[in-house]
Amino acid sequence: NSKVIQTPRYLVKGQGQKAKMRCIPEKGHPVVFWYQQNKNNEFKFLINFQNQEVLQQIDMTEKRFSAECPSNSPCSLEIQSSEAGDSALYLCASSWDINTEVFFGKGTRLTVV
Amino acid sequence: GQGVEQPDNLMSVEGTFARVNCTYSTSGFNGLSWYQQREGHAPVFLSYVVLDGLKDSGHFSTFLSRSNGYSYLLLTELQIKDSASYLCAVKLPNYNVLYFGSGTKLTVEP
Image (cartoon, rainbow over all chains, first blue to last red):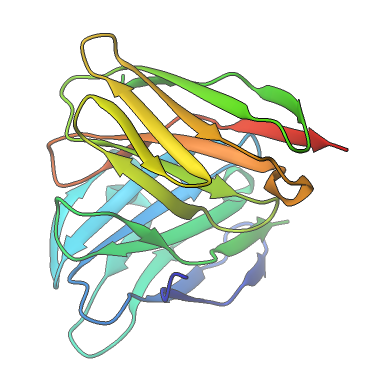
């Protein structure tokens, strides 16, 4: 069973509000990913980290989305100004390194009303 | 873009088997993973393959043909509780990013 912990499980925000979700990767895993899964079950990669350093991120993440993985604190993903289209399941995942299996948390389901 | 394709739905009968197909067309390949996902829950890791051939893991087996851009997940001795979506994800060489198919919803009937 995965030991990636995500909070909160559910998040409801109004349009224009900030939405912040957190992730504690599996112990010892230095590589962390954020994915967005929409209502059509389509996955979109957002950003990944190795320790505190960003490895790769998509354009969307560079604008309204911000993420960090500080040392000794949970990783976080924040949407600065939520839009209806951001409603989705946000999945955090971790792995030992960039070449090993990836394990997912239970996700944060964001609803923007 | 990266193309990972799976059929939307698959039905089978308890006690028999089901084969979930996945085809991919990506710029590079560094392995393929299979995940099980139940409605409203996160994907659960099942198997990872990077070499051609069949990998037998008991209830789940996986096959890969890199030259054909094809993999399948084989579930044997099906149980009702195997009803779920099964996701295929191709790993590209760039930083371990996974490119997912949209999943195959398997329904196991009595």
